Length: 360
Length: 149
Ligand code: SF4
Image 1 (cartoon, each protein chain N blue to C red):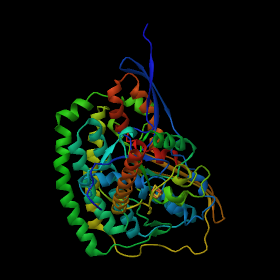
Image 2: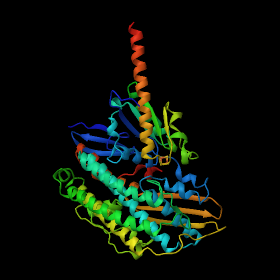
Image 3: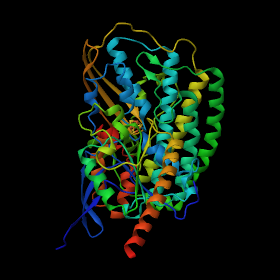
């Protein structure tokens, strides 16, 4: 009879920029069971909604996570706008879409670099971060921030982007696209990458559905589900299709993200071309949020839900976030069962865990 | 700054941060900012590290990790706190689950402000940490000599 050993993985681990802990029960090199334990990044952010007024809270919501920062504040603002019965002007909706897509690209590139690092492909890591830097420059040029944008506010956006800057961004995004295509090609045909990812950590379409996977993990298993299809912000008016792969392994998840970067580049170009003119915010003087609402958005990592409950005061009564990483932990534990110890970092990274979103 | 005799290695830990500062810190290691030109290498092993970079506002769970890592880094060591969270709790100061500041847990030498801290200021913080590291190293050498006498 074989004896199992328990190997702790994390919270401080070279492949993880963020702390998460897994207890891996091993039989030789094979993982029998993986038990995640969390709590390293729990701050109690949801309760802050009761201490800050609903306008300030947009800034706090942005700091749920520094990677998908903008989309968090967008979701929060959409919720409050729904409670107040506001409709944001089209220009604000388009700019929000543009920033959300920039945020998606930078998140995916960041992930691409980290996972290349996990495969032991150091130069690809450096290259993808070099390209990410081009994008972060564009973000800085339009918003003033690098990772925390701070431009979303209840009723619209805080800052307009003039036509000249938009033109410049259009040019830069083309430059970035060609640089990205180079590494994207390397990533999708390289033998090292394929060896580490093809057929590893397979999640079948049924399992993905049953375990409630979201985002690229779900789409890599053959489900065409992307919450941008709801048509929030300007997505309803742009031309795009959710990206689907069918293999369900680590490689498929990488390819979904790579293709999503190209898609987001395309969406940004569309936003720039069709940018409507006009106001960037609506005023709501004296109005206070009242009632309950639920908002769902597509984060780089998948579906995020915000629940908000207000009773007409200046603070919300309850603010609740369900983040994509939380939904993806069950599929992760399922995928880890039966894999080799050496594959654990790769599988873990292909769900693109964002611990600070997850624990808030 | 004078030239350095050794290449300092850094250890990074995200103690209850929002990630913003952590990715800025990672950005320092990549081609755009490239701290490796100062001989600085990122390591995952506390026993190899000289400079400890901590971000975030620290909760009970991560306090234990921070203390552990700090204890495992060999002397001389320098601690750099990065971001408003790590300085004072920042935007999470009022949250119920944070200590609010790395210096409540371990001694901090350099404070890098910003939310998120910019890579330039992080590099500035690391360079200042290098000076302190040199000082501490020579201080240790002097004391060793005294003991030997
Ligand atoms: S200082 Fe700001 S950006 Fe940095 S970890 Fe804290 S909240 Fe995030």
